[in-house]
Image (cartoon, rainbow, N blue to C red; front, side, top):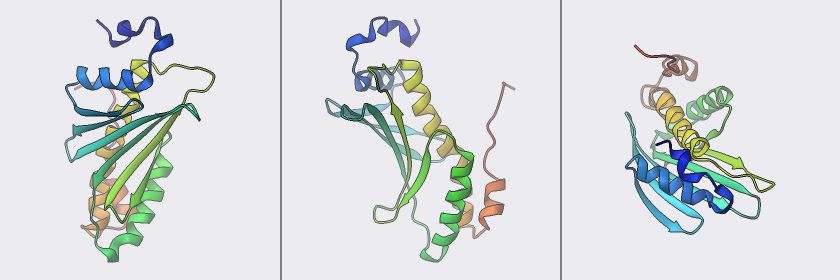
Length: 167
């Protein structure tokens, strides 16, 4: 059964309920923090990712923040910021930012659902998977630019290209 079949009449479906159902379906560790917020932990190839999704009724936006720890040497912060500019130029559905106090790399995305739009399970699943995919794709470049002391331009060359099709 497709996940969307659980939501045939989505008029009363809260976006965080959709996220919770997806977390259960994927067997992701999660905690429903509040009625309008959920936190999850998802294992990737390179890192563990902490995802928080929250629904803002006021601006009708489902916000996703995905974080992972990164502690670059202070001398390499300029290279990291230049790399983030290059990475964000390649991303259409969100952006990375660096939170130095928390030592966290952050991927942020907001899905605007104004006019009583409903976030379907496929849409939310794609939003979460895109956050994980982009983090997995660019994590090696971040490591090379900060700890490998590669130039941001060289580090970008190792970013895992999106795979199409199957082997």
